Length: 191
Image (tube, rainbow, N blue to C red; front, side):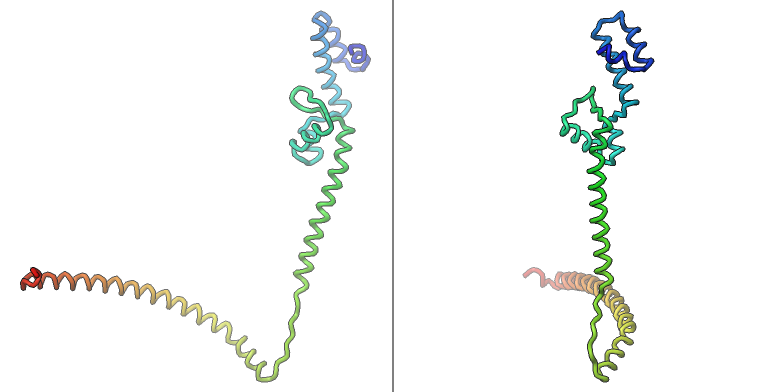
């Protein structure tokens, strides 16, 4: 692996081989792999899950599910997605988005067409019926205004009735008390 990595014309990678030659081979390989993955992601167009989700306009969860489906292995805690795979994913997603947009616009067109197709109902009237219809149409705003006024009067009268009922209850109570007092004075309450 060191030989393959050292063939890459990248200064940082070659210096890492020289710098860490004193350390164990295992440490050397780890450092080189890390630097190479950074290099590869910059120059060979590798994407993280976040970058891929932004590129594809889908959620990060959807990207990770696709990575699992493709059998990609995790690099650390996340997936590294190659540009070629991202392009493969991009085409079906764009086609799906176009299909959904067409459906949506088609539904909107259908709804607007239904709204524009209002049916006209025609009916024949004789002269007397027509005059009656004209009178009803002419009187309708006045009738509506009278209806609103009468509903206001009804509300007022309901308030008055409740007030009268309450005052009558008070009067009845005072009469009962005065009757009781008179009965006590006359001695009728002892029975």
